[in-house]
Each structure stands twice: as C-alpha cells, then as structure tokens.
Length: 294
Ligand SMILES: Cc1ncc(C[n+]2csc(CCOP(=O)(O)OP(=O)(O)O)c2C)c(N)n1
Ligand code: SF4
Ligand SMILES: [Mg+2]
Image (cartoon, rainbow, N blue to C red; front, side):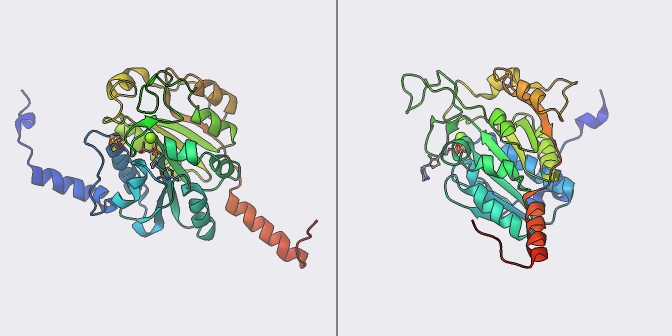
C-alpha cells in the first residue's frame, strides 16, 4: 500500500491550504444560509475559484441580484453587492457597468427572478450586448417562497401551486437567450464543480453579455425531479465537434432538453453597449449641435 495515503489529514492543515490558495479572499464573514446540500454552495465555490483564477481585486467586483434563495448571493461574497428588487437586477447592473467600465459586474438570480417577473429585461441586455455576466441558477422552482412551480418547472411536476401536476409548457432559457442575440451562452451543473468554475471563469472573461445557465437542485422542495440522482445521469457534454461560432448549431443543442448538454454553446465578438455609447458621444460632439428630434 502507498504509505502517503495512510498519512492523516489535519483540519488545521487543510484550512491553511485553502487559505493560501486565495479562494477565501472572496468569502465574506456572512455564512451562507442555504439548506445543506443546496446546489448553490457549489456555485459559490465556483465563483470564488473563478475570481481567484482571474486575479480580480475585490473592490473591482460587483455582484447584483434580485430576490430569491439564489439572490442572497451578494451577502456571501467579499465584494461590492447590490440586492435589488425581484426581477430587477439586470437594469441595475447595466447602469453600474455603463457608468464604470472597469468594474467586473456579475448578476446572479434564480429561474423565477430571471424568467418570470424579470423576463422582460433579458432580451434587452442581450441585444445591447451589455458587458456583464449573468449566472442563472435554475432549480425549476421558487425555493425562497417554499417551493412553487416556476416557468422552468417540468411538465407533470407537483408543487403547492400545481397539486394536479404542472400543465404549463416550460420555457427553454438557452433557446430564448440564443435567439435574443447573446454573444456568449453556456450551460453547467452544480453537480460538476470543476466544470462550473471553469465556465464561470470563461463567462467573466468574455467581453460582452455572457449568460451561464446553471442547473442546480433544490434539495428541500424538489425530491422527485431535478435531483442530483436524476441529473447525474441525464446531463451530457456538448458533442466534441460542436462549433460554438454557429448559432443554429447551438439552438439545435438547446432544444434537446431531456439530455441537457454542458459546455460553451455559442460565442461571438460584437461591440458592447459601452462601445456604442462612446460612438454616439463622438458623433454628438462632432456634429456640434443638439440631436435632432422628430
Ligand atoms: C414583487 C414581488 N413579487 C413576489 C415576490 C415573492 N418572491 C420572492 S422570491 C420569489 C421567487 C424566487 O424563485 P427563484 O428566482 O427561482 O429563486 P430561488 O429561490 O429558487 O433561488 C418570489 C415569487 C417578491 N419578493 N416580490
Ligand atoms: S430552499 Fe431550495 S434553493 Fe433555497 S436554499 Fe434550500 S435547497 Fe437551496
Ligand atoms: Mg428557482
């Protein structure tokens, strides 16, 4: 037997090792209040690993959220944070980014926050290519309010608001965001923490609007559908020959909802909203006159 494997691992040593890795630099003193086993812990770990990998200074990061279990995130990260209103994180994040281009702006929120009450904002950040990262935590349920059916709940799913099974066709967020013109679209899963950390890092590095869909189990209110047990066997990787510069190919993968594919669906470089605003300002200065109003 390999002697090294029999060496005891002491907690103090392990904690020192984690502290030296730099990951704790992005953890605030507020301990997460999520239920034990919630997929969101894995996302928090992925985000702090991504920040460490990118070497981002805490004071250059802003986490913006709406309302929900997912949206408690800013409290747990040592950075600037803005816990806004339900569904309103994206317009606030847009304002932050266009007024201070140097900041790394990350929006976090759940499927209810993003695709129910806040669904009207996503097309506009996508088409305007606002240079922010949107991490959408999809547990297919309203976790914070104790487990109601959400716009991404599966057909047949039973909750307190669909006691005779959900009859509403679920939305397909990946397909929607791809059709809105997002310039970076990917998918990951809370059960694959290394994949998740890498995808978050890539999303933040992208110049423009990056949308990362993260499938995440709500272990308290969903015991039957989006469980680790079920997801571990249904998720798959995107095919090796997938071309992420081809939006149609990305859409063809996005419709395969029974076997969700993980990875980078689509990427494109296009001027950001701030680039366009600079251009408009230049034109306005050059014209020397007030803009014409019809
Ligand atoms: C204007 C408004 N409407 C409704 C609510 C109640 N509410 C709080 S969180 C939430 C849904 C949260 O679900 P989701 O965004 O999926 O987040 P999760 O808790 O699952 O992480 C709702 C409906 C609210 N806070 N404000
Ligand atoms: S209720 Fe669900 S989503 Fe909310 S913290 Fe608990 S397990 Fe996570
Ligand atoms: Mg949810």
